[in-house]
Image (cartoon, rainbow, N blue to C red):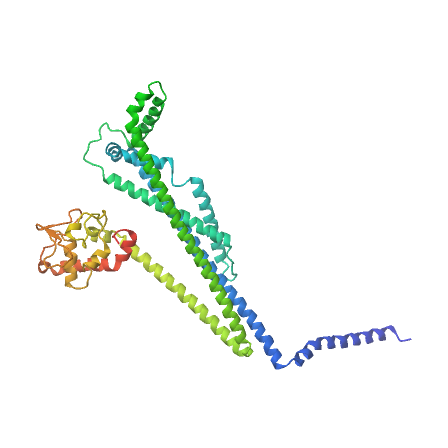
Amino acid sequence: MIPTAWNRKIARSLALAVCTVVMAAPALAQDSLSDEELRNRAVAREQARAKQLETEAVTRANFARFEMRVAEADRQLRELKTNQDAFTDRLAELMKSDTGRRVAVQNQQAGLVIMGWMDAPLMREADFAERRGFADEMVQLVEQRKQRPDVPYSVDPAQENRTDDVYLWARERASRLAERSAWLSDTTRGVDASQPVDGAPTLSEAIDSFMKARRDLWAQATSAGQQRAREEAEPQMTEAARVAELERLLQESEQRLREARQQMETDRMQFESRLRTREAEAIKAAAEAEEARLNLLAETEHMQRLEAANRRLERELSEAGARDIVEEAEGVRLRQIAQSPSVQRDLAPFFARGTWQPNQRASQQGSAAPGPISFSALVEVGALAEDQQGLMQLLAVANAQGCAGSKSLIHWHQNNRHQDRERTKWGYPRQFRSLSAADQDEVRRVQKLLRELGPTLVELGLLGP
């Protein structure tokens, strides 16, 4: 019988031989593959990697668009809250101010309109708070995802649609708030400020009085003297009913207009969504075509081209991001300059509101709505041309005595007086040659400001379009 130690030695030798055979098997199998099979496997691996990179690129692009939409919705909500608070404070001040007393005395219909606003506010606090909370969640989500740029994030369609709904909701109410604010400004400007207000009721008291009178009229209508009360109240009730009907029709028209605008915006977003889907399909088709082409390439050549494509994509994305940052920074810089005190002072004759415009003929003067000088009108009459004639045209618009020798579509002066008597004017001489070199340089500097800041001033509402 063989000793036990010898048995263990034989067992170890057999186990070592089996392990050697097992470990050598893959190498033998690898050696048995042809060059074509090795190349096909390498191409398949690169194709899979290319598809993964492509999917990640599409996902990152979708997230970038979602980030932009979240920022727009957040900005729109913040502006709406600020403007709504300012409008509420302004209306509360008007309710007790002397201007409000004059409105109550001179324009009773305005009180009815404001009373309608009180009955039907633009938005409830709960509705705004719910949308503000959702926007804050999306902003936080975007910031969290931006901290992990190496992990692509697929945007939830429900969140994307909800973000669009919040943006449209805020923009629609901001538009209606702007309409109310403009109407209130026109109404307060239209009152006679010279009329005394001693003893006159405040606007709040006038509205309360009207509501009480209306309740009293209805109560009287049910009393024993119904016929007499109806005869006495009929003119007021008829007028109130007419105004209420007009308000109702106006609100219905505005509602239909808002719905049409919102539907157009929804259609646009749906079109963009379909366009993105088609782009994704086109990318997929291109990838399939690339896959067929890659089957003909060797592993080394394919890897080199893929690396070059990745470098080019990163460079283009970086350049595009840099351009966006530069353009945004330039826009911020121009808006800051346009809102600076020095520009407000230098361009005061153009920012002031009035009904006269440089490109109107004499028969058209006073027909335009009050507003600042139109930027396109300045361009049309040549007031921004970089020559002496352009400076003369600009003087003809903003100088109290005009400028002899200027050319325009209209006669700017009548009886040696400027037709525009509503805006502040410069005090330069009428003859251009009488201006000193320093005065000419100053006019040229103002003209340069208008050329460089014109579109930004129109965007801010400081100049007319």
